[in-house]
View 1: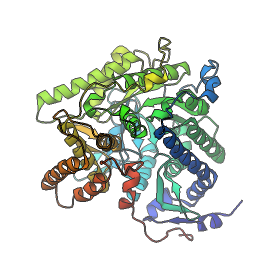
View 2: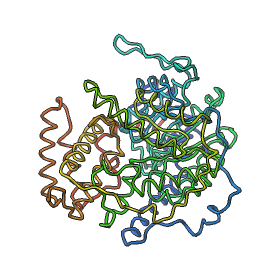
View 3: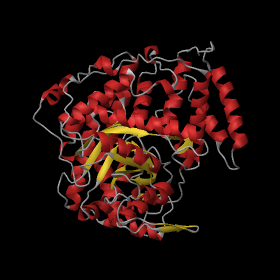
View 4: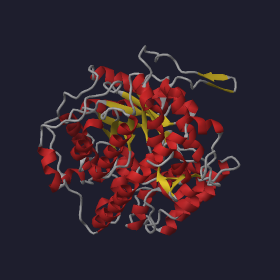
Length: 547
């Protein structure tokens, strides 16, 4: 086995590393573990990303998704199950989500919810500072040493929730397989952001969590196939073996937020069997994925975003299949995000927004979901009240939904009533610009139009504009959507946003990037990868030799 000196000599850390971070997070042992993960799994990760590109080419040529014939035996076998719910994951009726900044972590863990998904992904802008400080904050929160003062206010963790329950169970969402952490090089290449986020959190906290009657629990985003879930399972097995932890201690919930993953739900659970804690309906990314994957086909053009609800055919089929699949395999089927936030100063608008949250959560619990997401603590009571009334048990795993029969045609049924309007175009432009501008400043979620927008909703906005322009859609007002028209509207909205913004804003830079992505030509795989170089702070190596 190579010495620590030798391993560290092949690692370069290009971001700022304080002595506190070095001693707590980027320790020599943790760096060695990250290096092992990279060398063992990065080649497979890159192969799977190439496979994504090949599959996109097939879809562009008209080869549509279908249930895989080679894994039919897995789908038809009723004998296998996922893992039993782990400690702290039996009841997940309301989960709050948000970034890993210190204030958010304290507020989330003090909320009247059952779990907290600490997010390194869509609600975080991956600056080096955000990613490293997020690790510090979770490390401290797990050990109940996160209390801090901001101005004249103290932020302290309670010993229990206001309802008398233990503090919410912590679940960590890593970045997706497509992302890299460019501030951490192994053998001259960036480490996978997924492995970086997972590795640091697991290495430092897994045993501590078990000692506190919880465990290392994760949400896995952007998966497109069961082979990508298999890679995660291999990572889990090696990691548990490495620290001497029993296999199956890790649990992972997979976000089904790509159209291709929807055709492989059974297989994804199967690959993660001993580590599976269920699937989640990642609604906004799912809509983004549908537009993205079928963007070359005019039959898949969708109307204004407000019309693409959870009750339209392709979304309803996706929900019903997910619940049936999860419950058949004995794992949780989690509902999606309520993105609304309280509206101050407008009582009627706030009442309407909260009513829509209640209606959405009622739809979910009646469909058979075992829990749901909220983005704001004020929504927790609404969601809790609905689930408490209609789900008196800790979950609904007993609801098998054997009445459900979803076909490939159902999952691809784009019969969505509604039109494209200039208002819808402008809203997409404002959401795209507003989110990208905040992201470029290092902020990963931002309130726009009284909704908490993150990378997923920005992607829907970008992709819809691209789709409408590509296929020359006519608006309800009779105007053909073309590059000239879109740039005219974008210039108007950019000027308006700039006139209201504080000094130091980055709307002009956001507009330059956004404008390159909406006219039916260039299409970056993800906005986050398109913008990533703008928020990297690469400096001189910090670990070319021992510090």
